[in-house]
Every structure is written in structure tokens, then in C-alpha cells.
Length: 321
Length: 316
Ligand SMILES: Nc1ncnc2c1ncn2[C@@H]1O[C@H](COP(=O)(O)OP(=O)(O)O)[C@@H](O)[C@H]1O
Ligand SMILES: Nc1ncnc2c1ncn2[C@@H]1O[C@H](COP(=O)(O)OP(=O)(O)O)[C@@H](O)[C@H]1O
Ligand SMILES: [Mg+2]
Ligand SMILES: [Mg+2]
Image 1: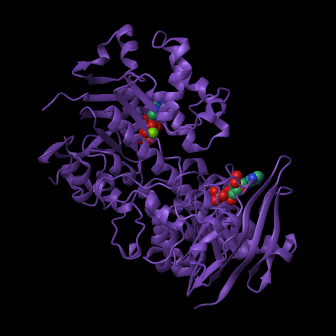
Image 2: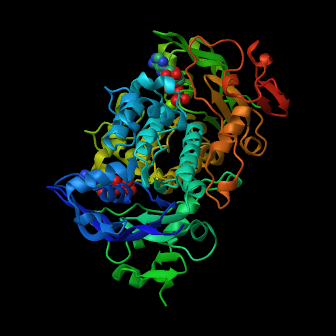
Image 3: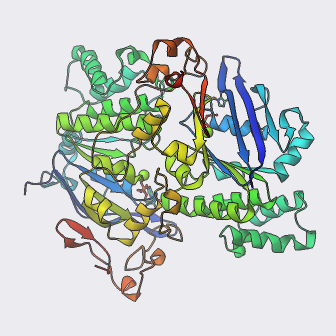
């Protein structure tokens, strides 16, 4: 199945605080088909979480402002909808999983009650069946149903994240946005959780946006990739496009070179010099130019256009012609 | 062979908890030669930080020895220890938490000289600070900046500068890059490798991230619930891991390559518990697919199965 059911166009988000304006997301566009997983990759501050919160319309009130763009979900522009409609979408169609499971769990309710509440809220089970359904969902995510009446603090980090996944799944969403869901977990537990998410996604044909800073997780879970830098998507394409040789944005190349690889001999790493620019004061021209090894005169003056080839896009002057 | 700079012998650190005696570090034998790096890896709670702190005597050992150039430093008196502590330093994971937010970069570095009187004169202090800042790649203009004005990478550079101030031989690096983004992580790892070469420093490099430790370590010790389960040169560990836990750890790392989806992986089930009143035998056996009754009969010592390759497992 290939049906564009989420399309984001020219989205721009600014945080307006008393002191400053943070240009967190600067005109990004991407789309997602049914059943696909899109990886959004980037370092801290790139604008990944802001992008996710914009889709969910959970940006901090008063401060987080969508300045431009549209978010088309199932042919409707979410930016034109009222809060009642959005609340319904959030519960029934789109679920979010955060890095820290405790942001989504209520410490004073048992996990069974919380999963049950999610089911009830979205009328996904008859009252008398809820208890049984809670048990089924728990087993589905690998928690013994017998732990229903325990509280979140009695669970380990990995188990808490499974509870969050159970709640996210309770409403059988069409889209799951997972924001660094395994960053806080140990690597063997991360492997378990990623495997679980993959399995569930395939059985339920859910689409997913996987936000991560780890290119390994992208390679393992995603079909498409968007690489963010300073609030822009600087490169995007299929997993193949991004992970094979060929034309790439210099930042993408730098990112790959920075990762220590398991299969090469002890050598020096090749970091990207410098730092991500301050989003309150972004450089003119290409936002990566101060750190770029290929920086040319026009990179400092003009914003690069998007170069397109097949499924791949790159925002870089190197590919102007 | 030359004498190791740092060695531990049957080192133990137990904590009394309400649930019983927690064996955070249990019978660990390690040695690090001068100018080399020992990587200590394992998942959270396996005792890495406790080990590092006991080696530096920031925590008292329960039993065992810590040798510095062959001397058991656990027997040192206050005065000798104070002298020695200059040679033994630590760099922490979260540079922000370990830096005083009300002090400037210069003040943070100079504090080391003020606490350790008589190393350099007050007049020399500022010059030495500038030198240190240059060594760790901090621009001079940041000398009066506060930690909150700096990014994580620069904050970690302050941590490195402080650790270097007294010209140590040995530095325990406790997850020094774990909180940093990859591009910055690589900058700090390179800095640490350069400094090691320049100053012939010896590192104990603690991390939960196997791919990070590979690059910087000569030898690696893999820990599980307080014990060292495998110890071998870095290259050999990645080419020929033997302990089932090491294999599971390696196989759990997501690899940034095409084809990663089809990689056959050994996902271990279950979770790490805590080593409270542990039963004899292998602490990994509850999660191990090769486990038999032999695994829980007796404690399983580290055994040299090929030259320099030590593993604690009944399979070998
Ligand atoms: N509530 C907020 N107020 C002001 N700035 C914010 C707020 N939330 C995030 N930011 C800033 O927006 C930028 C993008 O942040 P974020 O979307 O969280 O990035 P990522 O998830 O990629 O790390 C960062 O510079 C961050 O400091
Ligand atoms: N002060 C303490 N009191 C009681 N238990 C402790 C203390 N410090 C650490 N522990 C326990 O010792 C074990 C090892 O902890 P730690 O050395 O911090 O592990 P790591 O650094 O590998 O994550 C854990 O089970 C931890 O809970
Ligand atoms: Mg984020
Ligand atoms: Mg630790």
C-alpha cells in the first residue's frame, strides 16, 4: 500500500520568549505513506522534538508558535482544526512515545488502570471486556498480565517504556511518533524494545515517525530518512539513498564520519569542527556553512535550494548547476 | 613484562542496603600499563562507576588491593594519599553537574591550584590556566564565561582541563562523552587520545557504549553485575567475543549500515537485576541461553583461554 496520509509542507516554528525568538523549525516539508517508517535524525537542538510536537499540536502554549506551513493528515489540515477535533485525533489516530516514559505515565495509577483508561477513552473495548483487553495488550508488549495492579515506579526503565507503548497502542493509532524512545535504555533492553516496536508495527500496519540521533537505529527500523540540521531538513531520501555512496550533504558525510565504527581499526575519528549555530541568531546563507569543509562564497550569502534526484533531496549549493 | 601502573587484586565493594548486601564490585582483578587505556564496559548498574571510585579511593573498598606502581594504596595514610591524589584524577559524565555554576572557566580551573597549595605561585596561575585552556582546545576569550553559557562539549573540555591541571599519570574517565552528540563526542575522544599520546597518560575509560570504547582502548573489561566476565585486547574482543553476555552486547548495538534490518541478532531476554546477596555461580546464567546446572554450582573464575584472552564462562 502506498498512500500519502501525512504531508507536511513548509512548516516553520518559532519559540517566542520574553528574551528571544528561537527559530526551531525553518520551513521543512516531508510526507509519509501508510505503513512506512520515517526516521528523523539530527543532533540535540536540530528541531526534531519541535517537529513532533507540531504534528501533535502540543507545542508549549503562548511560546511555541507555528509561523507557516500545513500539516495534512488524511486530507485534513490539522492546523485549521479546533482543539476538540485535535484531542480526538491525538487519542485515536496519532500516538506519541517520549524518551522519558514518566512524562506519559501517571505515578498514582496502576499500569492496568492507565491502559484501561486509554481503551475506555477511545471506546476500543466494551466496559466488561476492558479488563481482559488490558491483559491482552500487556502480553502483546511483553509484560506479564499479572503485573496489572503494579504502579509505574515498580517497573524498570525498559518495562515502563513497554507500558507507554501499550498505552500508545491501546487506541490502535494510524501513526505513532516515537521521540527517542530508547535513548534512556541500556543497549540490550533497547534491542528488545526496538524489536517489539517493529513487530507491532508490522502486525498492525501502523505508520511511524522514529526520531533519533542514532543512525544505527535508523538503519535498523526505517524506510525513509530525513536529516535535520538547525531546523531544516538538509537531506532526505529512502534508507538506500542515505546509506549508500553517492551525492550527500557535507553534514550527512560529517555525521557518518563522526560515529565510531565497530568494524574498523583504532584510528582517529573525523569529527565535524565547530558547533550547531544558535537558533536565535542563525547564519546567513547555508546554516551549515561555518562548519562546512566545502564552503564557497555563495554559501555565505544565499540559502541553498533543494536539489532533487529521484527520491533523494539535498539542500546544498554543491549540487547547483 | 613491566610493572602495571594500576592494578586491582580481588577488589570488592559491597553496599549495605535495606534488601541485603549489594555486591557492586565483586572480586575484580585488572591491570593497566603506563600509557595505555583499559576500557570498562557494561550496562547501567554493573558497577563501573563504583569500580572507578574505589580505585581512586573516593570510596572505601570492602576488600582487596589497589596497587599504584606496585604499592597498595589502600594502606596509605592521609598524608601520602593527599600527595598521590594529584596523580590520580577523574572526569565525569555530566560536565554540567560537576562544575560550579557560579564560577567562571578560569575560576573553575584555578580552584584546583588553590585547593592544592604550593604547586604554582598565584602569579603563575593565570598563565597556567591559559595554557591548560589551550591544551584542551578552549578559546581564550571564554576565560570569563560561566558553564551555562557553554555547550556540553566545551563544558567537558573544562572537566578535562581540571583533571590535567596537576599533571596526573592516571585518569578515570567515567562516561566522559555519553552525554554529548556524536559530532562533539568525536571531538572529545580525539582530544583525549591526543593528550594521552602527548603526556603518556593512563586511562580507565568507563562507558556503556561499546563502539566508543573500541576506539580508545587497548584492552577491554566487560562487566556484568559487579564482576568482570571477559577481558582481552580491544581488537580481539570485537573479532572474537567469547562470553555469551559480550556476544549479546555486541549483537544489540544497532549498526549504521544498509542490511542492518536483515542482520541476525541474538536478543537476550530479561533484565539486569541488582547483585543483592547473589547466589554462587554465573550472574548472567538466568538470561543465558547456554545455561546449564554447571553454571550455578560454583563461582566461575576468569580463565585465560588463549593468550591474553580471559573469560569467566563454563563453556570454555
Ligand atoms: N519551550 C521552548 N522555549 C524556547 N526554546 C525552545 C523550547 N523548546 C525547544 N527550544 C529550542 O528549540 C530548538 C529545537 O529544539 P528541539 O526541537 O527540542 O530539538 P531536538 O529535539 O532536535 O533536540 C533548540 O534550540 C531548543 O533550545
Ligand atoms: N552508595 C550506594 N549505596 C547503595 N548502592 C549503591 C551505591 N552506589 C551504587 N550502588 C549500587 O551499586 C551497583 C553499581 O552501581 P554503579 O557503580 O553506579 O554502576 P554503573 O556505573 O555501572 O552504572 C548498582 O546496583 C547501584 O545501585
Ligand atoms: Mg528532542
Ligand atoms: Mg556509572
